[in-house]
Length: 454
Ligand SMILES: C[S@@+](CC[C@H](N)C(=O)[O-])C[C@H]1O[C@@H](n2cnc3c(N)ncnc32)[C@H](O)[C@@H]1O
Image (cartoon, rainbow, N blue to C red; front, side, top):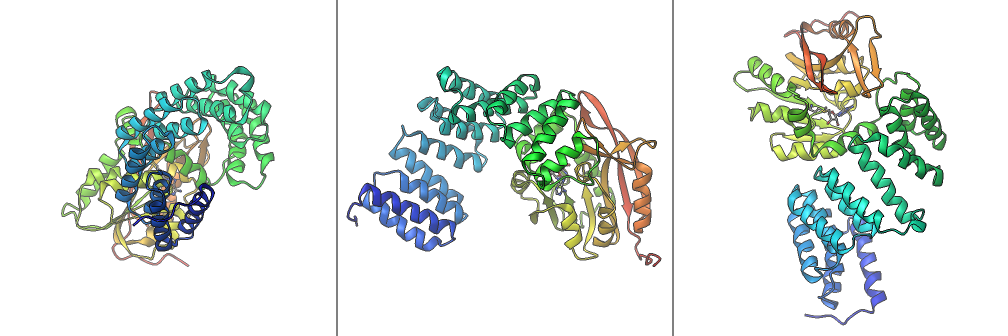
């Protein structure tokens, strides 16, 4: 059945209205309206792009891909549908094919900012940062010099600086951020980029100048307050959620390769071994705090109990979901998760390489004790602070917290743990090519806990 063609203006208005229905969750009404629009012009790929959004809202990844492929079949030379297909593939972890689409889109419109930026997003998700940088550079080479100060070119210049930062080429990135800030001094993104470069290059004075300017943009912003405190060598008690989520969202795709292969990170394997020694029958429920990509579950393999993962980074959780080993995954701060979990629930709580981002432990340790079943174990790692340092130290060079071992042991004892074993680890992983020292704590909640003195 075909419908009467709509005027071009009515066609677009109808797509906008359908998009609004999708945003409001009125998916049935959106689907019906979309079918009608499609019938009015079956050769137009735009309703299919709206159909992709509808399928995504309806949690239908196969439908999303199908709509994207049909859009590309209708308009193989239209870079928008090609990048949309690339994005859909990328979201579903099909990075090789996503990159093919991104390459095709860039070749169709090598200097179109929107297309190049989206292709860069696909490349970032595939951890192909060199390729992303190459596309941005090629696009910038096509911009006439007198147009480099226009907003579109500024976006590309920012991307270039940002990619260089990702590739740890801070010396090259810094002048690019600085030039952008001369044109747009109120750009938080360029300011943060410059601040990060100054910190990485060890220029404390410049870092403080950028931190001052960043905080002046929004004095109540927790992220900027945190950056400011770090620049001034203060020790905030914890990191804002946004700092952690941004950091790990960026690295989710290459996390396993980078950490396990590149930086020789062995904690998940080591902790999995310890857990199987404690529970050779594999019958236990595990709360994996800061589960990341799910490496602990992978090293454990299936167990006869539930593994619940908690993490702040959506992208890390997406990777963990792929393992299919977690009964549930929650995007939440571990401090909130621990506070809100009922008592006496888990045989094991694990927290590998996470407290280095959490900082203050005075809530974490007693809450972990409460949430464990009697006889349960809390197993967690810390980076070492010297006994002559403060209990909690924020290392400016890495942005991670180190904890004094005697302080951590005292907190465990005060919370009511017994059998507190601390294993010194000469190498948690590599940092700047050098072993990074730390320790692994295994603390047991008494089988019949005695109430703590009032
Ligand atoms: C270095 S990764 C370790 C991941 C995993 N535990 C492993 O050993 O492979 C740190 C993880 O902790 C998460 N994280 C850090 N602070 C957190 C917090 N306060 N609440 C929840 N997740 C946090 C990060 O998002 C990241 O996925």
